[in-house]
Image: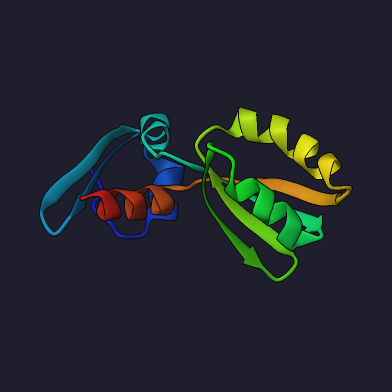
Length: 119
């Protein structure tokens, strides 16, 4: 058993986890089980014009939230498959261009923050 607040290091050496905050059990299980319990997946999308594509995405039911940061969209989605399927269609509808899209890998730190917010 290891007790630490350095979550990136624990993720490299441990198979099972117990996440606690202020003495309260938040989550427990394997790393895969921890990631399954997070509700959204984050994407960073570079598009032009960013505001127009952002406005279209805000109306989609699978989008939890969306921020415009510089020339990119930071999008949290409930359904990554649907997002990846619909994004090209939305972009083509308005004649926009997609420069880059990447899914941000979740880590144990993100899972912990999400669990604390839920508690």
